[in-house]
Image 1: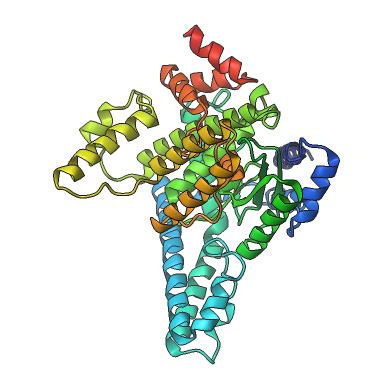
Image 2 (image 1 turned 90 degrees about the vertical axis):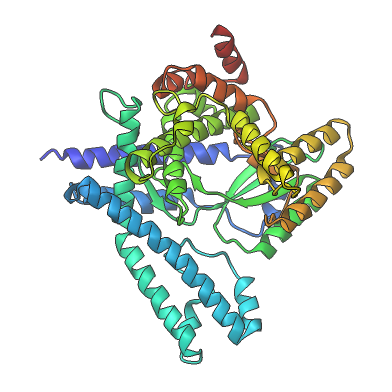
Length: 468
């Protein structure tokens, strides 16, 4: 008998494997084989196994029941479930911090070893170095904290699949409301899984900021191992290297790191769906063809993902009424007509006048400090002052750490990775502002996506703006 549900899931599996192959292909270095081999041999971590991830993640979809898990829940029940899940994620983070404090008070040496171990797992999925904290040799307070933490994690694990289903449904509905579906049908489907995503290695030349090589590594976040790998690459190739955590990845289903911030998760899920969507069009297919193409893809995903998540948050999760001032800055479909730079400038100038009025120093602003850093680094590199730029970046890194932003590395490769998000503080090229302008000049979100998905280069964006 013909099984439509199985056919649908099989098609999703095929799409997921295709996306994985495209991403793996996109991570192949655009450099001579000898240099690629040197870089790979210098990294202490294995490459991420995309095929194993796809087979494991998609098997849950193929062998799941025909009816979506959230079908028995009305909208209010879905919202309560999701709110409770993220509140529990926050409690897990607080309980983990309490447990670390208790262990530190009981045994500072053991606490230091625990802190220098491997990376923390996503909230609700365990914490390396802490499993034995509930042993009989510990104080009653530690044992009780461990029991409470274990209970929270068990409940989180029990609800995780259902919460994923609900969020997928809600984001899909918001995408459909935005007119991005086809005859009311959203394709590709919104699919993601909470996971600790892999790491991203980015390699840049020292004399300019550009992605020369990238690869995706297994998720084993040990700062010592990462620094040794980065140093080995730099010593053997005279290039700049940076290994970073990522918040998500647009394989299929998308990988999304578990967080206590609902707004961040909604935006990340929507962001990764935009990547899936763009893979069906020239813009997404050319993702890794150049730095500009990568930045175009990431910035479009940032803009659209943030807008979809913002609409969803306001519709279901934001109980506060928007102020008249906030409402006046938006058009009918909820997109702010002002660019993010304009909004930041106005906010900063307002805060500056308030603080100067009372004779106090201006509070530290990470976005401003990072953008100042990037622009000055660009100037130094253009002048050929590579070592001066590197000394400056290390000084700025220490400055940021002193102001509460513990950056492990700040170098050319850091900016090459983070600068691909054109709306971010680490970006300096004009693509972000240009795309924000194009969005502001578009009739709605569907109109904007209908234009950008056909782009293959920065010149296409420039021509589109000139045509307006």
